[in-house]
Amino acid sequence: MSREEKEQQALYEAAGWMGRLVEGPPPAPILAEFRKWLEADPLHARAMERVEEQWRLAGHMAPADSPRRAAAPLARGMGLAFAAGLAAVAFMLVRPLYGEAHVTSGIGEVRDVALADGSQVHLDADSALDVSFSPFSRGVQLTRGAAEFTVSHNQWRPFTVEAGPAAIRVTGTHFLVRRQGGEVSTYLISGGIELRDARSGERKAELHPGNEAVVTAAGLVQVQANDGVKDKAWLSGKLLFDQTALSDALDQFRRYGPVQVTLSSDALAGLKISGLYSSNDLPGFLQSLATAYPLRLTAEANGAVVIEKLPGKK
Picture 1 (tube, rainbow, N blue to C red):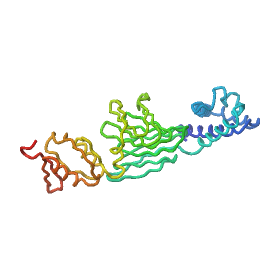
Picture 2 (picture 1 turned 135 degrees about the vertical axis):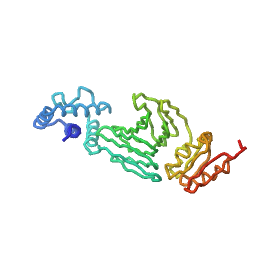
Picture 3 (picture 1 turned 180 degrees about the horizontal axis):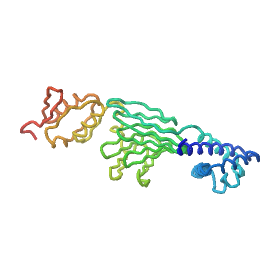
Picture 4 (picture 1 turned 180 degrees about the vertical axis):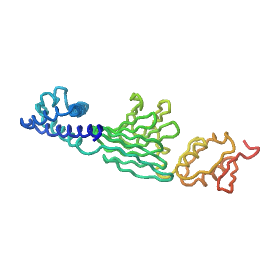
């Protein structure tokens, strides 16, 4: 068994002891067994410290109530309601809700993923995320693309999504995250979000339903309220462009299928595009460009399309 596996095992055993100790004053044999377990391995004491720290962070335990202090019964003088609350949390801790997973979607593939804690992820095409759950935290890293998260509520196990410079922390929330170039955008549908710097942990913003946050590669944050139409367009198979550079628009189409398009000049790459388009209809998008702008589309023998500006047109 690796050290990491031993540490995880110690955490579950510590959580199990917590569950037993909150049932009421333990008899002497149980107390002796707990002391024996505690002294058997330094990992046990550290694991118990971590479990106790979670109780304290949740506001359920004072330092003096540590079961390691002569293995004193936790329920003594705390009241039945508190003891019941601790028992419920202890049950949560000993459930096998930890592990790691790597999830991807291919070009043109939009998929649904059910996480071990009951949370749901709707993953956009050409996207990837890494999942890492421990007894005390739920972490997801969006390494590329976009996803819709519907997070199951659990105030003792916060759910964090990291995407580039942004760390999005929630307990139970419905929101969208997208990585585009060096930027990360987050749109909150319901619940609440605490936005932090992924490197320093510094709190950057608090989002409310209807808020969108855009985080630049440098960590600068801009928050604004909007209707979320642009952020949610991909959920219905659409792409909404609002003064989007043509090169960026083509990059978004590449998530849903092959894009064999050549721009005849760098100036065309920066052409600003606006409109709502079907994500699987690149030909329709290109034809709309030729209609709205002074452009010429030339189809080559291999199926590629060359876009060039019409001579004499501005």
